[in-house]
Image 1 (tube, helix red, strand yellow):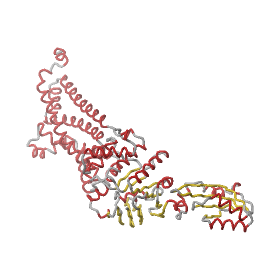
Image 2 (cartoon, chains in turn cyan, green; image 1 turned 135 degrees about the vertical axis):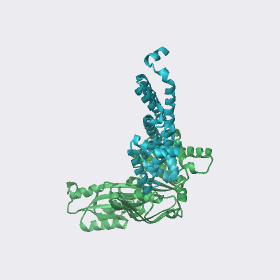
Image 3 (cartoon, chains in turn green, cyan; image 1 turned 45 degrees about the horizontal axis):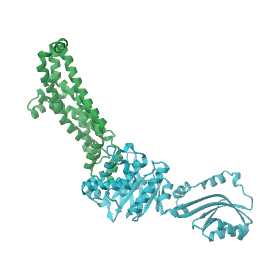
Image 4 (cartoon, chains in turn green, yellow; image 1 turned 30 degrees about the vertical axis):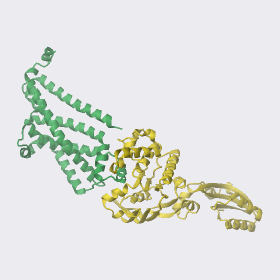
Amino acid sequence: MMAFIHEIAPNLERASGHLTQSFFQTVQMVTGAGVISFVFGIIFGVCLVVTRPGGIFQNLVFYNVLDKVINIIRSVPFLILIILLIPLTRMIMGTAIGVQGALVPLVFATVPFFARQVETAVSEVDSGLIEASAAMGMSPVQIIWRVYLRESIPALVRVTQITIINLINLATLAGAIGAGGLGDFAIRFGHQQRMGDLLWITIIIILLMVSLVQGIGNIIIKRTTR
Amino acid sequence: MILLKDVNKTFTTRYGNVDAVRDASMEVSRGEIFGVIGHSGAGKSTLIRCINLLEVPTTGSVMVDGVNLTELPKKELSNMRRKIGMIFQHFYLMPSRTVKQNVLLPLKNAKMPKAQKQRKAEELLHLVGLSHRINAYPSALSGGEKQRVAIARALANDPIVLLCDEATSALDPQTTKSILNLLREVNKKLNLTIVLITHEMAVIKEICHRVAVMDGGKIRETGDVFSIFAAPQSDTAKEFVASTNNLHKVDELIASDSPLVKLAPDEKLVKLTFTAGNAQDSLLHQASVKFGVHTNIFFGNVDIIQNRTLGNLVVIIKGEGEGRDKALRFLEENNVRIEVMK
């Protein structure tokens, strides 16, 4: 077994320490930015639905501002976003490099993306259900929790899957400019040191991460879809 | 129980203002089944939504159980809405929740022990005849079953009023009948005031005590169901009543000058409306014997509405002029409404 691994990936043994470290850096970036983005994405996504014209908390000023801000941030390419955010990142995290430095731009890139998808997912809830809930005497806040969020769980899981996978992609990209992680590992070992086997191993690890996200998501979707 | 006064509702759209409801006033008494009939776009959906303020009237007042809803603060309006159940054409059950969870949903805000809520939900599902589907999800139910769950859910907070928004319009005739029976049953059992809107006169005929006819956002006519059927006043009401029988076919025959309605010089085609529940045959027979005329029933339609018979007969009366007139006068004296058609 060891001989076989050595045969197909001769450089693995030497770099395994770096690889493990890079893997955990990527996991840290994805979970850290993921959790924060999930919370804010849900909040802003729901805000978009309830404040838009005809929503249960209709507020056109708030809606239009949020809508435009999301569009603006979304249209800035991630690499440029990282650079633009350096001062802010330094202010918040104390540094603009490493995993910590990557978190701020990752959150900024992911929240608008996820909020848009949450908006779509939540607005798929039949407006009749909202009307029926209001007729039952539910308050708008109760409607958000018990109907908008609860009834769109499968759709929310679906967009969360997409967002996490997108986040893995961005976290790798962040590696190119000093955030560490699997992206950085692939560049330093796979590319600059010409260790092709490590490049492929990186790809396989990321593939497994993506599959895991897909698999868990699909199970939850299956269990919650009625 | 319900009192709408000069209710107006104007929607502002991109294309201008739409007056969905105009100067609507109506009163519904406790325990009554009150129907609102109108074509789609007549404003009846908006009107019924004004009763629980799902639509806030532009002007006018809405009183339910002596409370002016238009003046209530939000929180109290929510409390009041729990006293006003509502069911819909498309049921609007929560798809992610089981039948029982759907019925428990409006009880979430109620202050009672959990076990009592469970019991309440089970009792309600028993009342609507769905005890066996308690753990099913809505997607597994038929339309009629879904509406039964919706009714159970609407009754969860012991409402005093039940609003039915086209509750049977998505159901087949047989299921419609069973849902209407259920509504009648809860109306009697719980002394529940029911307001229902529909575009089907058959629904009005089946269970309503009184009815309002709507058209163009206005209530054109209000009355007890029998009188509306027997003597509709407004054009809209006439049209709806006509839709429930085939009497208009006679008009069509006359208009097309069909040989079926070719009359001899001493014949007249007359429409008789019997509203007093009087024996129709016997009156006709008496008239023909007394005044020497022949009567020939050309077309007939007899209905039982609110336990009273309503008869419409189209009759050819044959005889010389004076006898014919006398016979008609005799019928009129016996509360038969006469309309000479040809």
